[in-house]
Image (cartoon, rainbow, N blue to C red):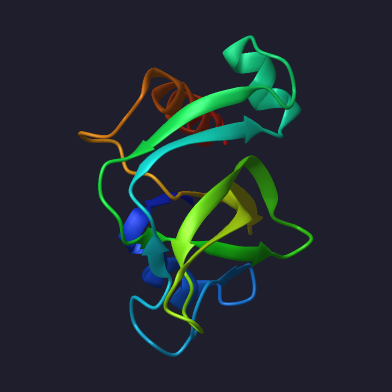
Length: 146
């Protein structure tokens, strides 16, 4: 079992593995985490294997572009979830309704049974950067080797 989720498909991931990722907003409200702001983000690679694959240093910045707002924001992850990429992001705060900033994981992965589940906050169409494409290639390569 190998599953890849991105962007708005997070509701399916939440329904299947509710204890793995805590999303911004209410867990009982459909699309509640879709609060990320549009624009480029200077993300950090925080996974050594991904950094090696990209031939960059651990903690080095990569560019991720969100061409539209309303992408799913991760609040936190369980201890057994690997964070590969994180960033300081701007989002619409569900409590105040105002723009705020926070550090949030953008790419996460975890094992499930004999398989692996991967989630990226960004999708792979118009907004993809070369860095984001490398992250996706790494994840798909990892999934194909299980």
